[in-house]
Image (cartoon, rainbow, N blue to C red; front, side):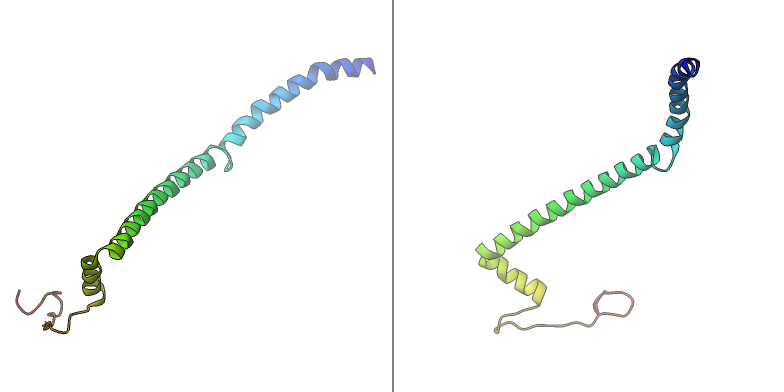
Length: 107
């Protein structure tokens, strides 16, 4: 019994070390190792860029909404440009577009 215990005490640390030396590269190179870490870092960068883009868009829309609230001319411009509204005293000329060119009758 003592003999087995002595062998086990000497062999066990060597077995654990050997297992670690064998398992470490396998774990690092497997699908859950460095490759996955790299993909996750790429995903994180993509999400950060999208978040930054959306934050700028939100900032722009807030400024535009504030301008529409405070500036009557901005509100009129938006109504004309986006809704196609005109004053009662204005005359509207509409021109047909030429097929294929995307332009009016006079190129």
